[in-house]
Length: 336
Image (cartoon, rainbow, N blue to C red; front, side):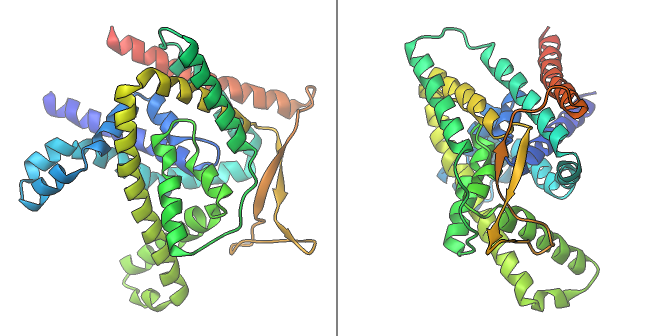
């Protein structure tokens, strides 16, 4: 019975990692918000905080059992394993639906974020002047980021490392979309589309015994880029988590108020009704390596109320809200 419970707990953690990984890849959606709503945000932050000099000493001395217990390695492994697996599975399905049914997917996300604001805000006990100022600061920052103009692609490895540090912030800061930040930095397609596709192609070739793929200079370039990006992400996860762990302990109420505000401000990013603005050069729309138009930004608009697709989108917003409320109901039922 104990083994069965342990197995089910592991499966749940892996599935939570899947959800967080899929959210991290979607511009405008924060994996940190998913972890917050699913109830493992603080555990994630404090677990990454345990990756320190003491953990390194335990590892070097060969005391693996103590290392696993101290760093909560099983928890991190399942969450991160689910997130990584999601990049090659769930997120690819999500990419398909975003491409063909974008309005309804964005509507679903919009509803989930509205539900998340309620979910996080309902347990906030006492609002005071400091809390309200923190809330407004979070909303302002979230809205400001949503209206920034993206930069151009930059494959310099130091900049890619910096993108890893900043991009991973979506896992540690609820409301901040790491993917959207990468769009603003100009490297979303390079790091989360092209490099990931090349990595998958190389791994598939190596698995089938085709080692000639390693002599392809272009593929090696992309492998270097994704390796540096991964290193930056790992460094960012640990360093940001140490800062957040300290801040959460000392200023828990203020941090939570900022998070609520930031998530509210991020609604501007995931507003479902928007037109794509493509990158142009001398009147010609630029294409990526797969022949797809490169999106520079979005122009938001108010939908026509009497259109069928508008009501369908509103329906998906309600589904998103209902999903978060059902998670809240399930959580309350489990505690009883």
